[in-house]
Length: 93
Image 1 (cartoon, rainbow, N blue to C red):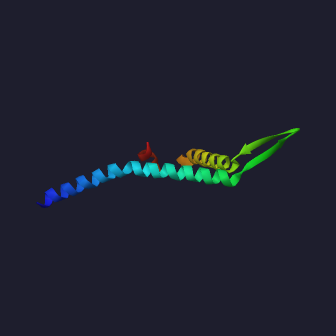
Image 2: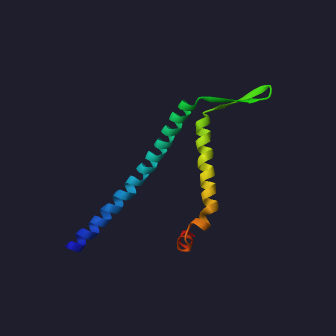
Image 3: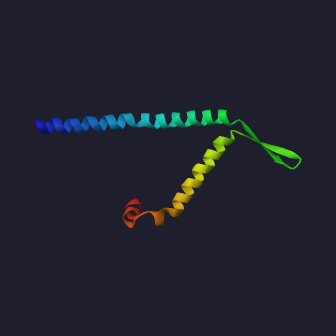
């Protein structure tokens, strides 16, 4: 009887994990949209003078955050072989 209950418990746990997985993705998407909307509203427009004319960059903090995240990801990827032990590098491949 114990084995039947243990198998049933594992089955229910797996079913609940599979059903709740899309909600985690939806939560991440809503967090991203909220973050971008708030940051866009806070940042306003940046005017960059270019000689006799000027360029306007709306939501400049959003673009700065995107550039910062991209640069950080790129630098981490460049430094990955030297910062990570050999055991982890072989496991990641």
